Length: 217
Image 1 (cartoon, rainbow, N blue to C red):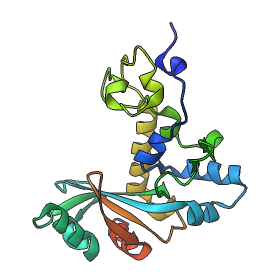
Image 2 (tube, rainbow, N blue to C red):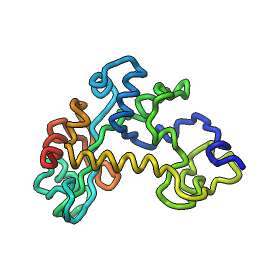
Image 3 (cartoon, helix red, strand yellow):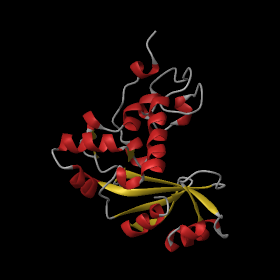
């Protein structure tokens, strides 16, 4: 019996490239820079942005958890404005690099419906729409906007999907805790965005990003 992935046919509609911000792991960024024939530093500068995800969390023994007073003022004020209440005492801080995005991902051409780095695109793009931390998901329900899924009669998965990618992401954050963010990203984009539980809080500068992750290193 063929798998869901084998029966799936991407329609290149670009909806996933429009809806999601794509984060990239260090080795993926190197491969994409090589595909474009540019240095990793140029790739980061030209095509990427800072991406800082925050989640309220008890401190425990996790070096990626910061007290709220370590957050840059603009982020703290943005969270307070978003929630309409004072910020929490501690936040899990997940520092990443993501592709720039306007209406679509920077690499998606809306006219030709093609990805500019298709052969070296990140794992989350290669896996989509078959990626879920939930067992036995129905992907058509999870991603109703996906034109390829809408053409499939059966879209219910058997087991978990994308766990190898999730393991790689976990290993990356463990490495950041152990070695620091700059170990993996010696150069940074000029600006980016801070998010609280997936919702945009505010745009941030390289200095504000460095302030936040500086308390982690």
